[in-house]
Length: 357
Image 1 (tube, rainbow, N blue to C red):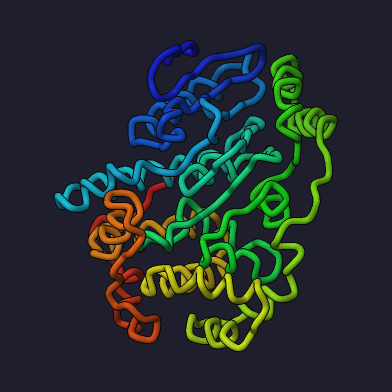
Image 2 (cartoon, rainbow, N blue to C red):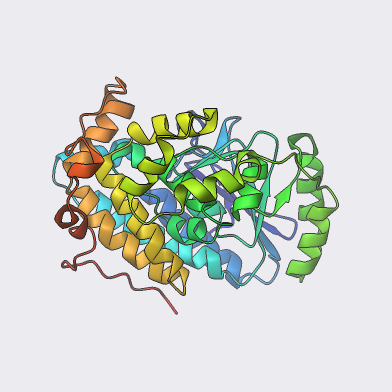
């Protein structure tokens, strides 16, 4: 693959010792397509093999963010037409996410602005994850009849206490400080310092190791003010330390604090089925030993999502008609039976992910 691609949805070039990958759909906040996933995998092939490349630098084009997630509109259209985009896209996306987590060279992700859904898969599995004062990280999938995927259940389940459960079920966005506290990021560098840091990273010599990349980023880093997760940690642990949605809601209802009221309101807007599936995935991830195990479980569940009316209805309400009034079925948490949830975990043809060694 050429190391100099100047047009298209993915810009790939070598700058100094850095292999730069820039997501380039700024009007769509760099939403990820199947073609971009494939091009990124090819770029990593070239950069991994090139001894002149010491590190990867992932960034987003435009001013609004690194990546708003997967191309949900395309997935919606395919789901309505009973197509296969979902199974194909998620398979290749999840395998790419695992590759990023295991990439042998330092992988620096600049998590500027919006970093949502699939964007977290491209960034939060990297070795060096940089956030700033503009960062908004989120896994809001339960609001469209889905669940945190791209290895999100692995990341969320390893956050302190029940913080990951809170973010995974409410879909609330994390600030840069929240992302570091939750384990989605490593360094806080104000946006005003990014160009200088970027120049310093590009100027690093060939053969630079991960420790030197770390030291370089730390030289520009600051300590942010605590975010909502750290400030409300004790309350979050108390409210979300349960293994059923019914118990979580029951803990929230008598709590008259502003935080609890806002949290309950957020949950009431989500797909009841998605909430129960997401919670079960999060609890299973907590007992898992690897990212790959979680990705495989997420993929099996995603195949059911693609066949689900919940996903189509959720995307319709949020993105197509934008009426923000989804009609979930079942409409109440207590009406989501164990049999409904079990469909997302049952083996089905073609549900295996094969990760390259």
